[in-house]
Length: 99
Image (cartoon, rainbow, N blue to C red; front, side, top):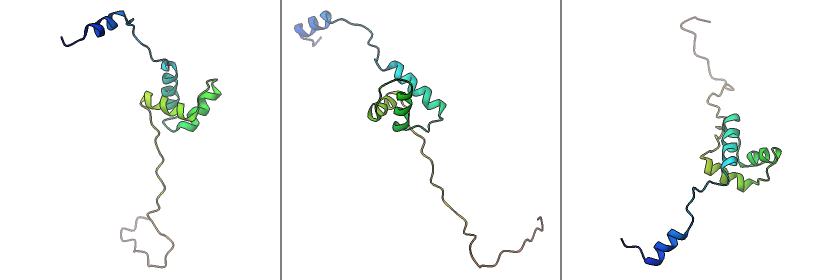
């Protein structure tokens, strides 16, 4: 089998239990906050929300919880102006005469 005797007995002696992540409740809370805010909360506001709810969570802890939950922030796109109406060029004639 390719397993040492001491390794086998160490494995047998060790208690095997289903290990539950101690952050399970907090991860569920992160997902709830993320869905309520439509993904707009980053680590700073997420940690602030946790503090308001009575948990002692800092910014970096909130980041690791968000990673575990598979959650990320939706960033706003920067507004980009595509039309420059402030010019002295002639306006095209209204050929269809709709307005």
